[in-house]
Length: 145
Ligand code: AMP
Image (cartoon, rainbow, N blue to C red; front, top):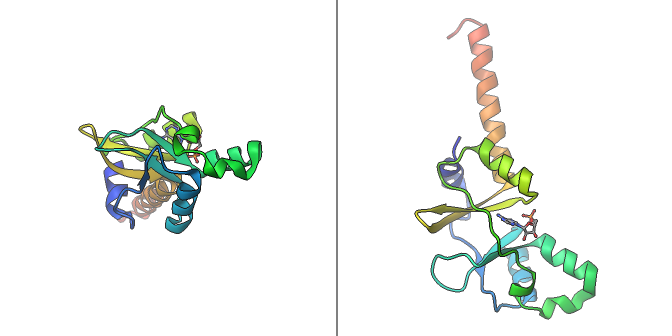
């Protein structure tokens, strides 16, 4: 299965983003309201400035307390964002997430941001794939194929 197939089944079609100048409190509110674990950071156009995940906020809370809620998103986001392409496979993306130790990835096509996938989306897709492979194998062993 490809990243493109995952994007086509996602319920939240639009890309949820914040600006570098937004407050961390506003980003936390958005994460909670949209029930997501990370937001794309971008100021204008299709260029990505960073990614901010719930982990970034929790770490800052643990480090410096609730004062970080008035910090700007730019202070806590990760700027070196790793992205994937719609033509990447679920296995490739799982490997990238595992190697980089992150659970979210923007999907870029021709330099444009076309979606965001999470480890939950990838694992769900992979389970479907494995189930299909098992069913096909069982059919073959039963002599039905
Ligand atoms: P996550 O596991 O996605 O909640 O994020 C863990 C850490 O990796 C946080 O510091 C995020 O800002 C960062 N992060 C999340 N997604 C990416 C990504 N696609 N590329 C680079 N860093 C990321």
